[in-house]
Length: 206
Image (cartoon, rainbow, N blue to C red; front, side, top):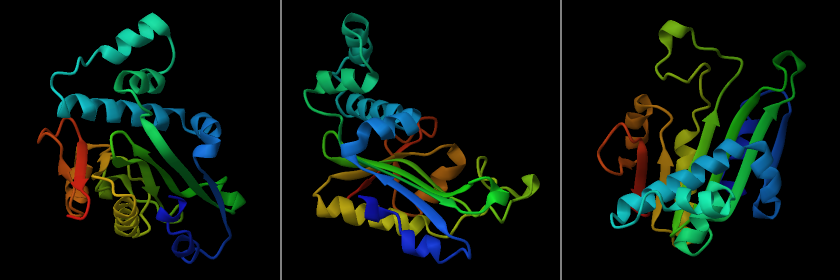
């Protein structure tokens, strides 16, 4: 999964060295320390999707399990569904080696193969810290810098990986409703047609 992020293309966009950090399932503990929110949100997204796809499921089952037995949301959800929620995971972070920017990252990706048979993009951020966007010109709420023009490449690579692993869907949760049209351009649709939810999916190979 580490190959989903096009490191060579990212490096070619800057004239300063890029420091790359990548980890996989064998270092899940380290990933959980570096991005606990990403891991938690992944587990929650997968459980929420499971509940939406299976209306007879008790949506509070995980919380009830945690209240009775303790543990994390990820652990509780895995127990309830009877198999690991996260089957594989890849964490990638690229920082530009420029002291003036205080180790600003230029690329960040957290992606996981998840229950039941999907590829979930938990976090994707591609930015050029040398090109800030004035507040009045910002098209997206959380976008303070111009992007790298590689979102389509990353999403295509993610889908290609999902195809290679015979996954059913590529899923993600848009950070804000202004990003929904962006992901629609790449074939993603809202899971339940409610913008408030922001969970999106793309059938693999479609």
